[in-house]
Length: 117
Ligand SMILES: [Zn+2]
Image 1 (cartoon, protein in one colour):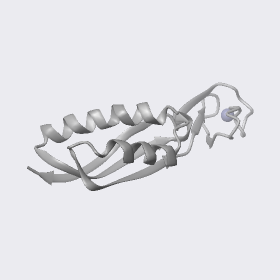
Image 2 (tube, rainbow, N blue to C red):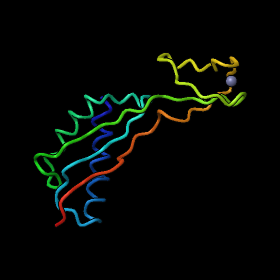
Image 3 (cartoon, helix red, strand yellow):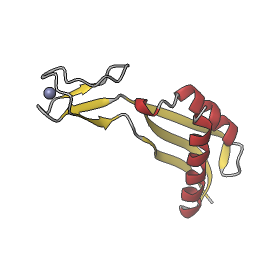
Image 4 (cartoon, rainbow, N blue to C red):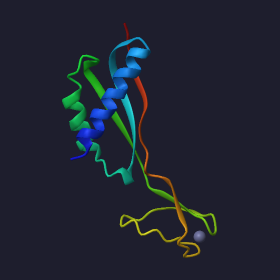
């Protein structure tokens, strides 16, 4: 499951960022996850629970996950639409195939809260 390695990377980033901001214990983490990343919220939460034993986290640290739909934009007519589950991107307005993905691939820490040292 790739959520484990994704989370490992994110914990690394969080640790650095917390130290830079003089934060001793991280209490809350808010994550934004696009559906196209194929990262499952449940698996991310499980991975988080494994990694939160690291020093930088409070034992009660919480993870919240905001899932973003996959949104595509048609380059021909400019209309936006949410992508079907099979990721067959065809514009529902003009049947165009020149499609740009504008949301759904994101995976980042939107914010976190902690206690200052
Ligand atoms: Zn179109």
